[in-house]
Image 1 (spheres, rainbow over the protein chains, first blue to last red):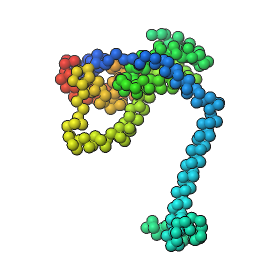
Image 2: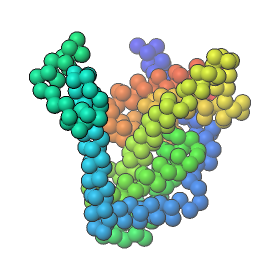
Image 3: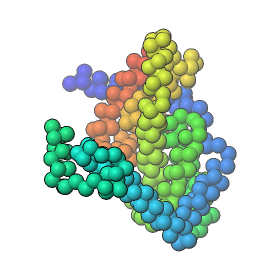
Image 4: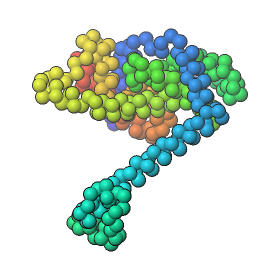
Amino acid sequence: MQGERDDESDGASEIARAGSMLRGAMPPIAFRDGFGDRTMARIAASRMQESPDVLPFNAMQRGFRVLAAAAAVMIIALGAHNTVITRIADTSFVEAAIGLQPVSAESILSYTSEAMQ
Amino acid sequence: MIETDDDLALVARARQGDDDAFRRLVECHQSAVARTVFGMLGAGDDADDVGQETFVRFHQSLASFRGNSSVRTYLVRIAMSCALNALRSQRRRSLRFISHDVAIEQAVDPGSAVIVGDEAPAGRIQQALAELKPDHRAVVVLRLLDERTTKETADILQVPEGTVLSRLSRAVQQLRVSLGPVWAEFTE
């Protein structure tokens, strides 16, 4: 029991010594001069972003991003669709794209499932 | 150091849009934030940036600050969270851009990737601190560098006190191994 207490106090004193060693090893700690000014400028900038004048612009930007993402998904989907038609109907990609070679939905599905297998 | 009552008065004024009051809070508490941030990230532009981000986040959360903990403790909690996020981003960046170069260097000279660190004891101690896992480093910074109690450390990191003690024990063990004779010289 006494031994356990000694071990605990050894551990605690080692941690205390480790603390004083680490504190002694750290260089003087301070932010660069003008930290307060830089921080207040950043706060002013973040306040601008939240202002009612800027919010509609931010919303518009987000809207454009969503539209661009949707357009990209549509282009990829159309590309994949036309590639499948090109293979089934043995036609060119352009003909498939402009719909000169209509192909039934069933054949697209069967071709896709074959390709998957 | 100003009293908590003064802090609360400044917070109340800052909530009303008084920038001078907020600036005063920055001046009063920047050294506590700096100790946390520098301990976690070391000196450099990242530390300054994370320090600013800490106060920006505090400013944004002024309305929800209820004074359950002191302003200083609240700020240290935000600073620790920002510093841990910065470390995660640094790690992601290094994995993306540096791992390839390190792999090439190791292939050319396996010894070249070993971090030797500064030969001066202070430099070696800082290097050993930087090599700790972020969770362990956070405990060392709060408990040993900032001299907070186990309970305060647990509150700031939002983990049980037992977790703080076990992380501290593992961190000290790793420091002892990585520092070798320097550890013996300073702690025995």
